[in-house]
Image: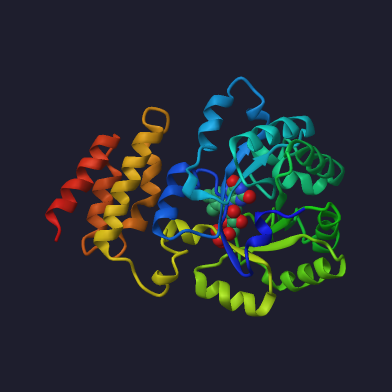
Length: 321
Ligand SMILES: Cc1cc2nc3c(=O)[nH]c(=O)nc-3n(C[C@H](O)[C@H](O)[C@H](O)COP(=O)(O)O)c2cc1C
């Protein structure tokens, strides 16, 4: 079935799903700095979306029109919950639904979700099927890793390719690797060959340590994947998807003004529900190139409330040229 994925030409570039990062606020920031070809939400619990507490989770699934095409990612391991959650995601106007089969967090894996599904292919298949049933025709995709404890590319990837999914995103590390060591790009050639031999309609997105659009071009010449995902490099540099920003450092003024917008959006979206100290992880991002960065960061880190953070930043901005 034709979907938005078919209208993206290779190599397309996606904002990787990142829990605690790619919330509606950060997605707006990235979209304003230079929009990727496709955005993913943070993962959201399929169990949570069918529970009484769904209201809080639904906030993570808010998006603006300017974020299309946008894919919602779900995690869990109970097919019925995925079915109901997929119906909900469809009703919210998303362009696609992605199933997380790669999260290494023990809270998720010990309940059989995330990368835990690598150990239970029968359940993984039932989950994919349930999402397809509930998705109302939206394209269904999977994001995974290359194995659980050991590399299982030659069993796990063909299994997923046999599930008739629109897209398979592969983070080139095992669960055991977590985020340590380099991504194992040497397996990408095998993955592409398996996809081609299976004559599967599935598009492949590669994920792992990609720094910028130059990197995408370089990797594309070698691996010919359909798409590439950038995660952590977008936290360090929200302008990473902007072709005009490649190889250039965004001016300090623009960085700080973007920080200010980030604080304002966070305030509007999360005031009273999320701790403003979460914003401190972006402090290094926005203060890169600042002559007195260390002292700015130290003082910023000691502030507690959103008002204090905003006031400190505005004060700095008004005194800098
Ligand atoms: C803070 C953080 C949160 C993440 N959360 C998710 C998630 O919710 N769903 C998912 O599929 N992958 C998640 N990932 C994995 C990324 O999507 C990506 O595959 C991985 O970070 C490797 O790509 P990178 O080197 O470009 O960051 C997360 C990664 C980080 C660093």
